[in-house]
Image (cartoon, rainbow, N blue to C red; front, side, top):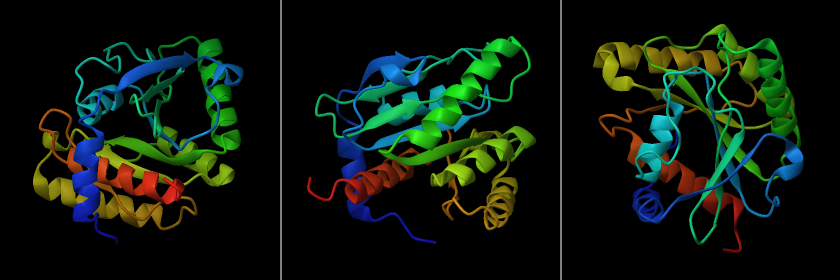
Length: 217
């Protein structure tokens, strides 16, 4: 498993000390911004802590909307810095039962179309709640990503909510499960938006992706 370089960790701290801002919320593909720079998307079950993690990542409280109501993120929400080197994309949550079926169908259609057709999508970070591990809805998204040949990486959220020994066992079991998934990146990041653990590593990983996808920068 590749380690995140000290250079990328430092560059990640610099990148995410900048002023990140919300750009737009896209309910359909024809209002997406031009595909002219790398995009890194964040997917996860509803209430997995995705918005809280994005806020911690961008170091701006409340930038990504958080809610106790499942399915509040109903669009592809784009964020960038003033330099606009890349976009971070907050994807609609999945796997919840309280939203109307028509909404769920529309969001699933949007996700599939985006994942299959966005040429600048560098990676999807798949958020998994440390307390629950991989569930059936997660495996459905993984199958979708495998089919679209989009590289994805599992990020465990709320890692402070379980014991370190349990977290270690979960990370190993998750890695084992990912061995059978052709589009899965063979590394798992454990994070906590509350304790800020794993945030530096996630930032460093994003910098590595940015460098890999913008060689002329």
